[in-house]
View 1: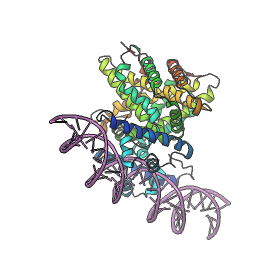
View 2: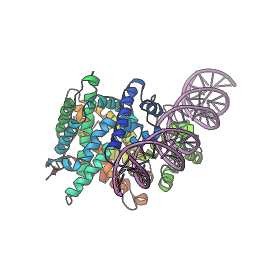
View 3: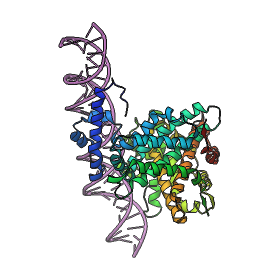
Length: 212
Length: 212
DNA sequence: ATGCCAAGTGCTACTCGGTGCCAGTTTGCT
DNA sequence: AGCAAACTGGCACCGAGTAGCACTTGGCAT
């Protein structure tokens, strides 16, 4: 998911498997023993990957911790053109695309996503790293919108604002989703999608909120 | 700005002066030689502060780099109760409070703020760190709103969305402000405030943007 | 099959941000 | 003056991330 144009299949399978192994080892370990207590060296040891390769597969320790969540955004970025092919309010288009991507995540995604989300809620540094990917997403959307709606002034700013709302809605949804008592074992992507839809549907009205 | 309830004045003056010295040395150095090329050790050397103290004054290298911008949010957080005393649409209240804080920044703030903003636009890691403080702000606002509007369901989510818009608007404003050709020497806080007001005034309409 | 080439891998050693520790100093208060 | 608590700086240390390089391995043309 980082950048492996590579050849085609066999090699990239190995890479994908190593990545997967690292994530499977790391997230439970983070949850049990704490993010800082689990060192990259130890993880590499466990997953039988050299430290050098670790940093080829992931942008860093935080990127590893956020893999499940980040994959959503990265997939969305990759498929942006298709997603923006629809018409209608941008916010709704993005919401639909987001739901779409989440529904397409590989089986078992929920379990790791919950761990990832909890980690992100606990550790501000990880949280910040997560926003980086969202920022990249925003940038892509802004570029695409400006290209499409060239001429309409302020399209740039509008796109940025809509993305901010989409991201905030997503974060809020994930937060609620993950905070269910036994989300670790029972949380489903359908629930998350419902939450997400609800968050984003409520967004326009939210802007009207007043202080008495 | 970190946590010095301390005694009262003499000691905190020294601290403030050391902090100021570090910022004054660091930001130009970052701009000239690049963020990564300037090490914390070198900075401490220049500003005659021990590395140990550096990390007592700042949350890290990124925090130092973002001091001017972060100070705005931190001040706003500190004065939140007063800011939220007004009535009207939350977004407008926040916009007014933000403008207010910026106008109260110490003289010479612009010069450093521009450097800080450029750095943030260039280096994603710094950018992410900046969002951390905004996130803290959001959390405070959410708490305050929930406390005030307890009962109205979804106040939580609404507050979060409004904050996201405020933050995005602020970021966009700072970005435009800083990207003026000779902003380093001529940018004024009045210009920034105007941009900020414009961004946030346009926000509600931005949500309506549609794809054709 | 075979054999070449590029891409990927693992090692060692390093840099640098950040922290724990502790003894020494300063400050506020009485 | 004198005490306790807060602050300081120096040092050693940890862990994330990188550089360089020799080596393996998969892909592919023949």
